[in-house]
Length: 188
View 1 (cartoon, rainbow, N blue to C red):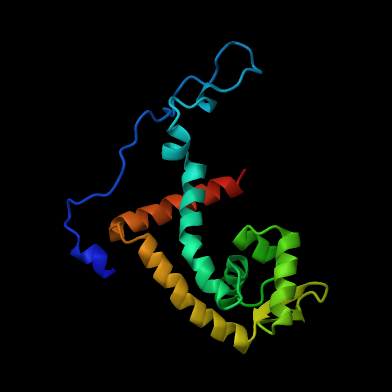
View 2 (tube, rainbow, N blue to C red):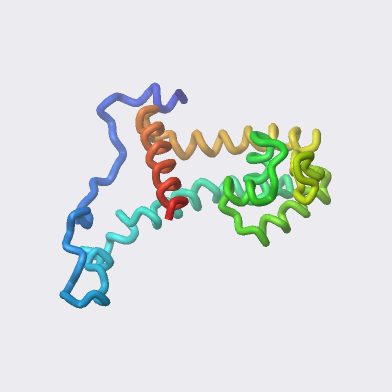
């Protein structure tokens, strides 16, 4: 638990109440016309998009997390996407490109370019998979692992800054809810 969480009083909250949320059981049709738009598609007030629309809030939070992190990474000539690939391969060496796509949600053409860039910098290596030589296995080199370790310190600093106003329980709940959201989106 970080110091800012320990020092905060239990009742202290820094949150905006949810107002005018579209109820989950709201009528889904404006008319009897099956081609009519879903009534839930029309927000109840103009601030709904920025205050309560989950995709917007997730993207906004990620953008804010990455804002300063990008600046720190740029000093080391690494992008956020490259960092994500380094982090995934550090935790799961020997993945195929398709598996990295699944873990990072980076589209395959972009990921292929990133893999090439990291390979050119000797941060990762490609080898034929023993089980099927048609597929490449991707792993970090010693240099890639060393860079990951250095970058992790930066990532952790930004993570702590971004979760400083959350209790440990709130952070755990947020992680759980994000995992559920990711799972439901993957199952579409």
